[in-house]
Image 1 (cartoon, rainbow, N blue to C red):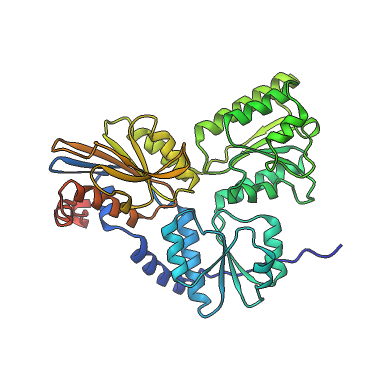
Image 2: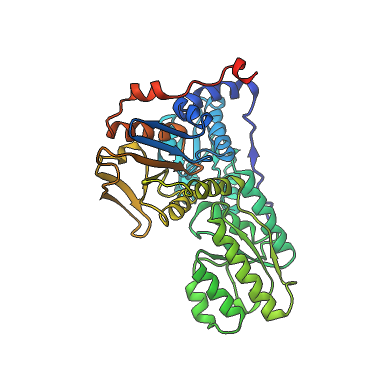
Length: 416
């Protein structure tokens, strides 16, 4: 059996490089206005317009680290071919910036032509989502150096599903089967020997299909047809649902993940008379949970409109939209340019899965208006600032007036 090629990993996090990177990243993504509003409690009222920010929003540590490493790689390997597997994160503005830095984008599952074009002198960046084991082996076989930006929370899930496979438990993964992170996790669920199995479920309806099968009420062929493309090769529900361990894509809606865990545990206990054949560990990342909790807290206060800023393919941002739209008019926007006028907003409709320009009367008139703003873990502060500026501008409040109203940061004397 031929030896599996080993990845050639490179560390680019030297103090000198990271000092340069921090300065550049701050120029591209930092916002003085957002920082000041956060420090002042997240609420700003000018005349009859109030902006309210969630207590937690925007870049998380894992995203910041991934971006820092990509910027560092460009500096360390200046003049070398630098490639990225898929997108670094799910934000079009950040990915555009990387393209402008001459970082070339490969498919998250590179084609044979893309792989053959790679040479040992080339450098490949692994995104924050991670990559499938087969892809990592293909990159290693080309002899390329790699910069691995995989989020630590994602790697924690990988350790969990590997352990499931080692103990002969099938991984039930709550996530989107086409999402890069879920595909990477599923590949680890096969275990070190490759003999493990997994099933990916997205919705509570999917979960109910599994629990019905566990209760002996399902049809094998119909079950396999329903989950085609979401199971491991050779998956047999009659064999591979005997012992299950639950994991999840780290950016899923926490309440839904917990409900899936509860339903599956109940089904196993009902079938077996004990929970011995069920394992679960909470693998929702802390940043995802913090942003969801902050939004729930924010929704306790009255607002007229909610803007959620981020990439339309961002899972954690999508779940923020799902939470907010249950309580008030909510618009999922890429950036400030989506706010066309007081009456028209370009936004992504989660239900129709398409971008639309919709009418709203919530920003019109001379009466008081309160607009809530939040963003997923892949949205930089500069985009949030531009959204704040645009809302005030539409309401007749200039940037100069906004700048003048921003609370001054506390001085050392104030702290004393």
